[in-house]
Length: 239
Image (cartoon, rainbow, N blue to C red; front, side, top):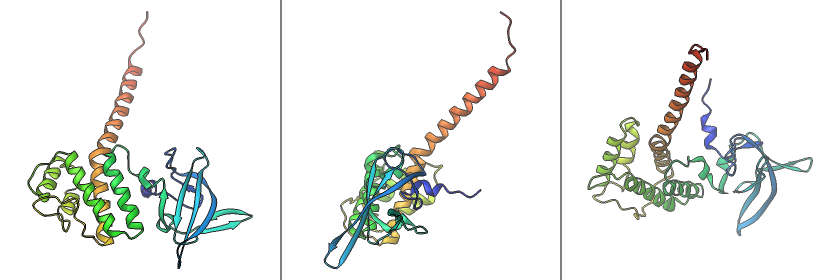
């Protein structure tokens, strides 16, 4: 059976269902409301719409450089057959909900800001956010070492079950391997490097903060099932 877990990390799954950022339910129906457009600048048009969750009734705002809305029988719909997320450069709420809330909030916020900046091709801002996100993670994890590379190695040794290539990728980020971490360095990275850094950091965060809790919760379920089985197997005792 194919792994479709990547859909849980999207905002819009297709033209009829999405992952609601308000009620935190996945694969729920939504309604397109109030499509609009305006002049971003004299020679550039911007298109927007509201997406209303069928269940919780809350509405989110989404902006795109392309007109992806069509009407059928007077009802607005998003064009089918397109990767909707790739067409949207700004949303309120942001895709923050796709990052598990068990991860540190300050790091999640910085990653989200970086992703939104990247969508708008603001590479300098996105790069600064990712530097800051890594810097904050190293502080939270109380890593040791005099250099950035030493601190990443410290983090790597702390979590030996995580794929070591993730840490190796972070350790060799251009402009980060100085004697001191400069979270305010403003040299921009290109979009390919940014995407790699963002996804790598997400994977590290998942392994550190989410996976252990999932394993713990599964262990509790298994233990409860075992206890129930043992209890059911005990012979009934006469009073």
